[in-house]
Length: 325
Image 1 (tube, rainbow, N blue to C red):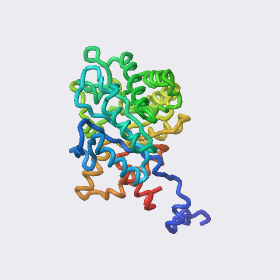
Image 2: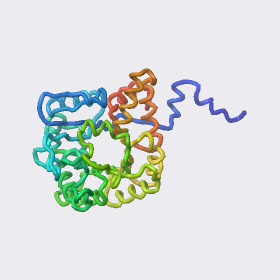
Image 3: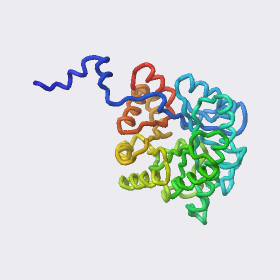
Image 4: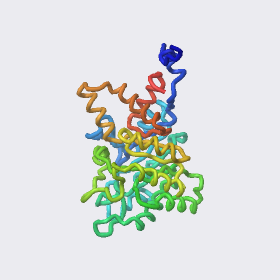
């Protein structure tokens, strides 16, 4: 035989030399929940090992991330008071705005990203303003743009709209530009499916809708071509990074989006994926370290170059040890 693929698998040094998929801790983003109050670090029941932090305890978590080599975080806010119009999302003293100021003051080198949505802040739990029992797309755009501007004014380096309203990227881009933030990038949750994998997050953020569901604005998980349409639309509106969410069961979509758009692609390994790994490991069904490495590698192999994951700190450690990357 002339061709023997096994020749390049003989030892660890050679295998790593010819590795096709490589990753670095700089591409990891850690999703962080911040809540009102002080001195609180409360574990999220549905997400063992993940916590809701107040702005003071958050600082210790940021320090641990920075030491591990994870320099990017995305904030999700949990307000004490919610209302019909989600006013806490764009309030000057909102929980995310205060978290940004604290993080920026203590960790000037940390890259701060914010989730821009209404669901955590509305009393009804939907991602926009209501007109009867329908989420009104166009009236929501102004508040999303207002939220994004308030985040950047408080210290955000990047904003990430997750609401799935049509036209929100353009509305945010215009608002940021009008306020002199032309260089602030937008990472759009362009391809966000209506997924059962979000359940633990809704427990963590208290954002479950009080009626109905989100299938009228999040995508049907049967659809593939629609994902490409959404991604291309958001790029045309000014998105700098396109996100696919969830990650694990949508790697085919990650690959197609990466092959289609001319901007970086991110994938979000969501709360349900995290909870499944934790539950399986606790039962002794899977090796947590090995399966986390394999899942992460699959996302990068599919074409993503940015990975949002609750295992960010652990993955940075695995990269440092040479287990992956």
